[in-house]
Length: 247
Image 1 (cartoon, rainbow, N blue to C red):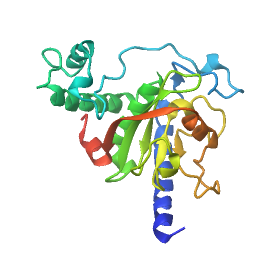
Image 2: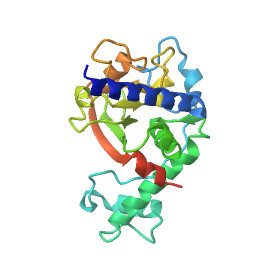
Image 3: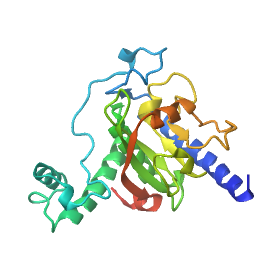
């Protein structure tokens, strides 16, 4: 391991420990799950003890990165216009303004809810994590990429959302390309596990060159993420941008 890579790994371990400690101090640490997946829940746990009734309207609508005005259907234009506080449906002229406003509202919701949410689905858990990063820029430091990722298709599930931190440019479907600075945050998955490292919301994207020395390396989670899935980045931020959004 080069000196540069070793320093990167050590910084990431510090970041991951700080993020996990911050999560443990929020209600997310004990939050119940609106939509537990039976093939994800640890066999020693009772699904009934984990589950809570679902709520509606907890996470604002967004316009995903890469989406264009032409990609949106008429019914979406009205809903997104209302969500962005426009006077009517989103139009070609207001599309970018709506996108920016919805990003702000998404982060603002996460800032508010990460300290209060006692139950959630994966979408809300992810929003709360991003809100925590916005509220606590010290956790990551400057210049760190934060991504909201969706699993669009899963075995036995109906889609999933989680957060990626510090991913290097490359193929989203190949974790081996994520680089030494990358880690996941998936509190929804963690809440359905019984023992560490499963119960950590923070998950390392590398096992430190395969030797398993990272306390946040969770091979079962990596299997869950890569098991016949189709992934898409929905939103991309930098830690510096998040610190200014949703205040």
